[in-house]
Image 1 (cartoon, helix red, strand yellow):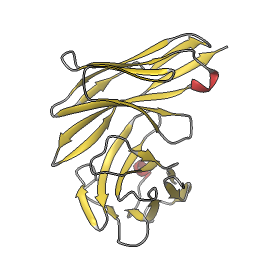
Image 2 (cartoon, each protein chain N blue to C red):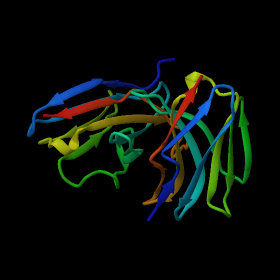
Image 3 (cartoon, rainbow over the protein chains, first blue to last red):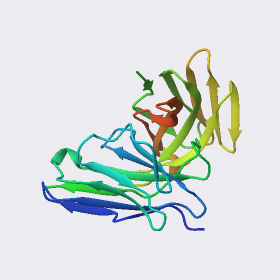
Image 4 (cartoon, rainbow over the protein chains, first blue to last red):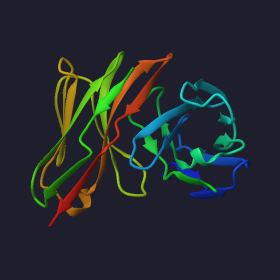
Length: 114
Length: 112
């Protein structure tokens, strides 16, 4: 059973560019969560999606950030016009059931903005 | 608002027992989870307590007291591979969905 997959593992972008982070949930899981983690800190919830629906985006910055989970293909977290403060590790997690406390995390994408 | 507090660092000797505490302040509390994260790795689920009491899973146990807004993770027979960060996370109902609100993590260093 493949686990949660994320790519790329490392992404370097210059200020003002766009970053696209991809997440494929575990097989059979249709609930996806995105988190951001700064060094030496815990994970901060960003958005919760189910296939084709955004369930909760209360943790997403209002500007420049968007997320989708299409019927076919991976979930994508998109950051437009990146700034240095966007540098962080972005983790995707998936669960089998809605609002499940047991979430399975991917290896993360480490975004560096230069 | 919500807040979780856990010690930033704990050091213990191989073979010993260590307890990592977590206190929380939140509304809409549904349960407390624990996750382990090795440096550069992904968080992995360890345990979940929805009710008061102790849950045991092998060398790891987790405890919850809802009346005290307090829980802990107990690691027994420590091994070098247990060196990692441990996060408590409150499962909370907010903004029409459940969320996991994570603490800042406790870095555990196991020494030989």
